[in-house]
Image (tube, rainbow, N blue to C red):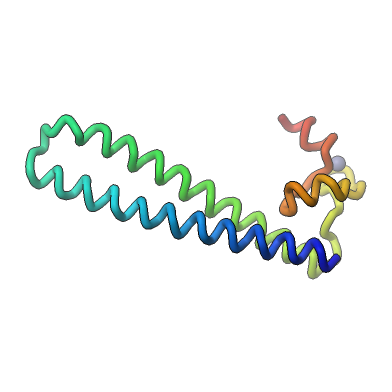
Length: 114
Ligand SMILES: [Zn+2]
């Protein structure tokens, strides 16, 4: 299961980098909105910035959620329950784990949810 650990570590690095990029953007957007509010509360740009801010906030939440998933997968790896579907108890296909190393369920259970 060394490969799984490597995949998860790579996934975590990726998620962290993404989060850092997003929070950098987020700070910029917040700073920009603060400046424009100081100039004119009725600035037509205000609505756009508020929208962008909520979009970035949603992406930040998504990235944090993904990071938590990866962390949980690393814990399962340590416990020895990694790669076992949480719903049906069958093993998750290797090909699926290679694409989504943090997957909790097998393909058939995942498609049953959606
Ligand atoms: Zn399953």
